[in-house]
Structures are given as structure tokens and as C-alpha cells.
Amino acid sequence: MQIRPHHLLCMGSFVGKGYSDEFTENMCRVITALENGENIILVNGADDICRACPFNNNGICKDKEKVDRYDKAVMDALSLEYGGLYAYGDIGNEVINKICRKDKLSVICGDCEWSELCGRIYQNKLQKF
Ligand code: SF4
Image 1 (cartoon, rainbow, N blue to C red):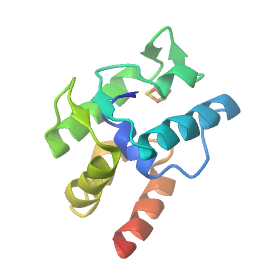
Image 2: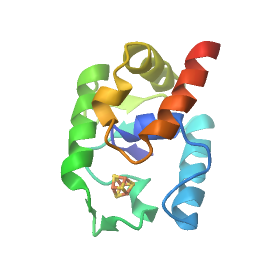
Image 3: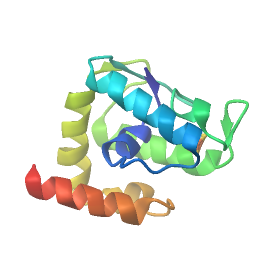
Image 4: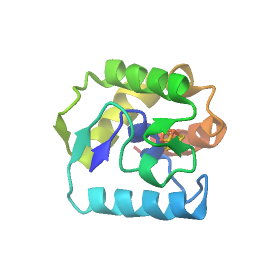
């Protein structure tokens, strides 16, 4: 599965909400495939989640500037490489340990419309982790 960096955060806090029914169904499909052992290939730009998004305009996000900033911040926080292969479980642990536990979530994507919901979900995860 081709995944852009900041979607590593979005997938970890996904609770069935999204921009449209098609988007949500696709997000479920992507996450299920990764949970079943498909690897993540890290890509710079539109990915397998973007392709069902109503804000994807021929491969360009309507919020390109903002999501590129999120991608770069996640790359830096997790020391990832574009083109690299990653296991979903390993990356999920990295997100918890290197982003959530270090209070970087609001720094990386605090101006996202979903940030309040994601923050609550990651807080709950942290307590159980
Ligand atoms: S097109 Fe933009 S808003 Fe839609 S999933 Fe991709 S990055 Fe997110």
C-alpha cells in the first residue's frame, strides 16, 4: 500500500469517520490490508487513501501546502525515508513512542480539523499502551 507520511497518524486514530462514505470505506479497506500484513511503501504525495478523497484533484490535495507540512513533520519525527518499506504494527508503535508520548501531535497537525478527535483517541491509546 502506498501511504504518505502524515496518514500514518490518521490511520492510527481512525474510528470510521471521514470526508465521504467512499473515503471512509476506502480507509477501512487500506487499514484492513495493512493489518493483514501488507507493507507500507512511503510515498511523497497522493497515496492509496487520497485516491478516494473528494479533495484529491488529479493527484493534488486541495490543502497541499498544509498536508505537505504534516508529511515533512512526520518524516522528521520518525526518521523515515521515501520509498522505504514499513510494517504497519511497527510504525504504529513508533507513532505512539516518538510522537504521542513526546507531545508532538499538536505541533505536527494541530491545525487539522480532526485534531481534537485524534488527540482524544491517542490519549486513550497512550493510557493502554
Ligand atoms: S487528498 Fe488531501 S485531504 Fe484528501 S486524503 Fe489526501 S491528503 Fe488528505
